[in-house]
Image (cartoon, rainbow, N blue to C red; front, side):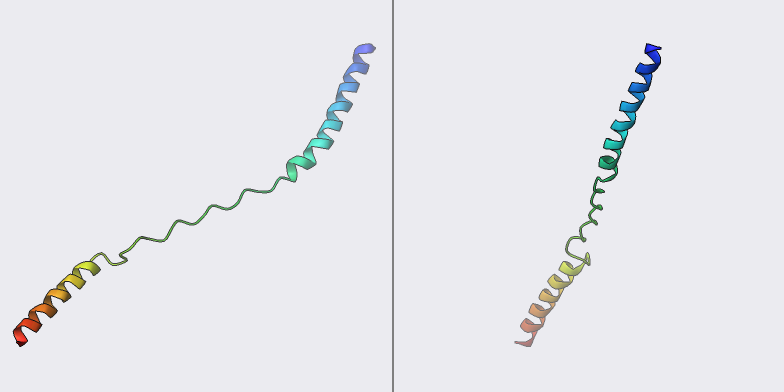
Length: 67
């Protein structure tokens, strides 16, 4: 008879522990959403630097031809 009473006592304590722990588990704040990936780096167009250099050389060539 003593074993049955001991098992009931353990079951009651287990139930009480669950009642105390479960609200704490469900009250946890969900993790923050993942950050979006960073924007692409510069230059946006791959040939923009080459275009500027070509324009610079074209302008210099035109200015020398004018003189």
